[in-house]
Length: 323
Image (cartoon, rainbow, N blue to C red; front, top):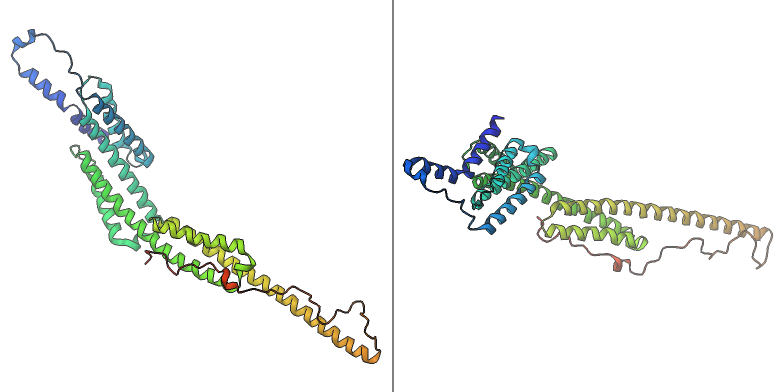
């Protein structure tokens, strides 16, 4: 609660600075001025500015909540909330756009700090720090400094937000570089698995599936080129898995078919040899005999391809911008 009180007081100092100076002037005036009629509260000379600042602060508050500020910085968020509610309750007709801008900056700072902490947790969970250690260390330093700064009552909201943004950007660099690396590796695997599918002529045997999986690589390329390496990685990984399964399945089915063809040919050969022997021993003439296939009978349809390479979907070895 001590932490909340400090932050709350700091915010109120900013909000009521003008009121305090007005009171000081009143205390210093001679006693005879007390007979002068009390002036009406000065109206807000910039009502639109105050209203816009109020709406902006409300939007930043919602963004901070969505980012998890209540969970990560509950005391600090409660303090800013208290100051914000006190300001809204004044209803004195004065221009408070400057104070509202400070409130907004504090909500923005808490939002960015919460996002930084959430991203740090993910980086730690997935073991990504080693992919960009310098950036990770910079994020650790900036976040630690922010956590110290927020306990100092007089720290301006703009300074808090700058430090929180610095921490988030450093952690984001770790995340981005990590998934860019993963995407490049996954794409190489996807292209290799596609070539394996090409080799067993999956582009002919399972044309629709083959095209669907090739499109996954192309979709990944689009995401990669628009700075979404994690989305690209997921597409490439899925394409690699599906092309691998497709190649294995087509190869297995072709092997089964070939085995059946070989067995049928063996039976035909055996039947021919038997018929030849029987014809010598007991000629049957030229009439067909039930149960004995003609030598040129097609027992199984053999795969025939008219230049299957024409059906191959060409995928570049690397996506533009890949390392």
